[in-house]
Length: 450
Image (tube, rainbow, N blue to C red):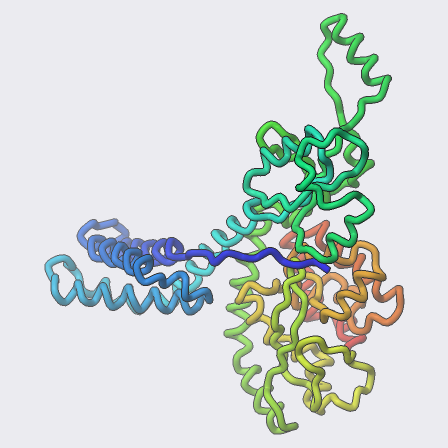
């Protein structure tokens, strides 16, 4: 089972200040006939500086992690500080109308700018290698170099793979190649670095000797593709060249940032547009049967991390949210009248846009599963856990190709996994847009729903 590494809280005070400052400059520019006047900037700079000071002294970023809450707190502090300065030092502000427009417009323009900036910074931090729990396969010279160059990683131990001179210390060896399965099952590890010596063949050595004799330069092309497949990337750590095995499009920072920003903007727009439908469905659910409007089961997300999924309740009796084992069957008697309609058109999944807004899910990606189903598929389907490299989605490539619903047969399990992996290997923003379009307008998508 994959376990997620602990995530340190991200201090977004810089994002708050950046957003406020950017909005301030935009409105000063527009209000002053598109000329940037320094007469109007002083009060904003003072307010932002005070906010930064107050934030660090009162540890506001450490006690508030939800972005919406942080934005509201930041907004209130800035408005209060700016108002105090405007009252006690009116000579600083030459045009009082600018502050009124700024205060009123900030929640609209600043909200979108804030989430975009926060997503970029969080993604940049999450992409760093710092803090990764790493196993090193090897105990010789190359393993020592890895321990030296991978300074940001937490080296959890070394694996003895064959008879080579031990240079890392016997106490650091956690076992041999035969015991790696047991270790990974019981310990949270983010990556394994293979640091085994590559013995040059006799033919390569003969070519190098001949080239050296005649002063001819040599280039060696490693056959990475036959070993790792097409999806790999070479990177450098100090003087060590490493290969990222199974390098995927969303591993690139710019791709990840694009998808992250798209998810946040799309989820905000969707939640605003769907609010009337949410209200209607909530009323119908309460009228149709007793119980809560929402059902929030625990699902497994990115890196094996569990999270609560928001769904409209579609059954009279739901399985327990954590550790549930019951699967929905066709003509399930637990499904309510309104629930049957919601499930047919996937309306019960719409509240998951809130999960997207919170950064737990994407609009498009592999669908999240229950813990017991996750463990079951991990044991029975090859490469299944690769699905957890990235965030799960509300809809996905498997779903629009007819592989939604039950996972009872080997074909259903295998095809869903293969489609999810294909999506991850071929991701593009256009592919996401295509999947969203098919989810909404292709009638075949909802045929297997029940």
